[in-house]
Image (cartoon, rainbow, N blue to C red; front, side):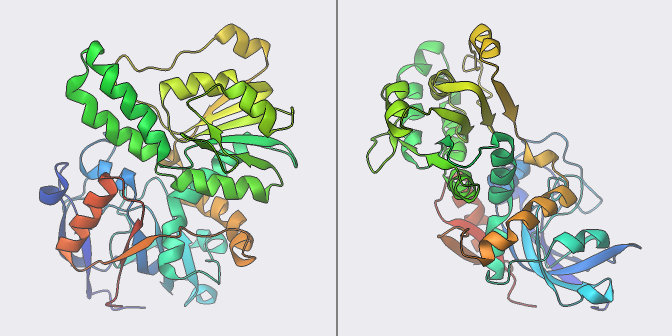
Amino acid sequence: MPDAAKTQTVLRFTQPGPIASALSLTTLPIPKPAPGHALIRIYASAINPSDQKNIEGAFAHTTFSDYGRIPGRDFAGTVVAGPEQYIGKSVWGTGGQNGFQQDGSHAEYITVDENYLLVMEMPSNLSFPQAAACGVGFLTASIMVGKAAPEAGEHVLILGMSQDLIVVSSLFMLFVAPSLHLIPVLLHCAAEVMLGSSGAVGTACKQLVKLAGAVPVETSRKGGNGSINITEDLPSQIESATGGKGIVAVIDTVGETTLFKKSLGALSAEGRYIIITASKTPGMLFTFDALAFYRNNQSMHGINTITVSLLRAAQELAKLKKGFEDGVLSPPALIDEVELHDEKAVIAAYEKVKAGAKAKQVLVNKNV
C-alpha cells in the first residue's frame, strides 16, 4: 500500500464553468480507504460526454467538497490496498456517482467498496486504456440490450451506428428550427445530437445484440452495405431486411424527434423501444400515438446510466468479460491516449469530446 502521506495529481473543478477555466490539475493526498474499502491505482481513465457536461454545469445533483470535485466515471488499474487476495489484480469500473456525488477517476487513485472487487476483474486480453475506454459505452449498451431482450434470430433496429445521423438532425435545425424561433439554441442542439450519434454506444449495442444470437439492423443516411436508409420509408425496408419478421426492439442512441416517430411506427407488436437521450429544447419534445402503442402491447424504456451505482455497473461489465476474452467483443477501435499530468493536453482532450471526436479520449497515468 502506498504511504498515506504521499500525494497524487488529480483533475478538479471547484464550480461549474467553461472547461478551460473550470478544470485544472492540482495535488491532493492519496485517499485513505475507509474500513471495508480498497484502494485502486488508476492507470487509465476515459473522458465521456457526461464528464464534460458535468464540468460545464449540466447536472444539478453534482456536489463539491472543500477542494472541489474530481470528475471521471470510467477507470482501469490495479488494487494496491484491500483484501490480500485482490492485491495486484487488474480491475475496471464505471459508475454514476463517480465525479458527481463522490470523487471520480481523473486522478491517480480511487477507492471502492472491497465487496465490489469480486466482480471488477478486467478482461485479461485488454490493455488498461482499452478497458477504461469501454466503461460507459458498454455499460449503457449492456443495459439497453438487456431491456430489448432479443431472442436468437430476432431483429433489433439500432439508431446511432454512424455519424450520418447527425445530418438528419442538422437539416432539421437549419430549416425548421428558425421558424420556431430557436436560432439561439441551435449550437446547443447540435452538441446534443452529436452526443447521441457518436456511434460508441450503438457500436457496442451491435456487438451485444450479436452476442445474444439476434440480428442487428443497422441504419445510415445513405443506406447500402446492408443498412437501412433512415431518410426513406422504414416499414418496407424493414420488411425486406428482416424477411418479413419485423423488429422486436428499437435501440435509440440518437433521440431525434423525426427518427423516433418513424422508428416507433415501424416497431412490431409486443416490441420494446429503448432510448438514452432526447432534446431538452422546447418545441422538440417527443409525441406518439398512445392508442396504437397500447393496442400493440408495446413498451418503452429510458436508460440513464448516471443513476447506475458502481456495483450495478461492475455487475454489468462482469457479464461482458468472457465476451472480450473470447474475442467476440471488442473495445473502441480508435483511442487517443492523453497524459494525465499534462494539463494543456487534458483540457484539449475534453474539448475534443465536446466537439464529438470519433476517437475515445483516455487519460493515462505514466507516473505510477
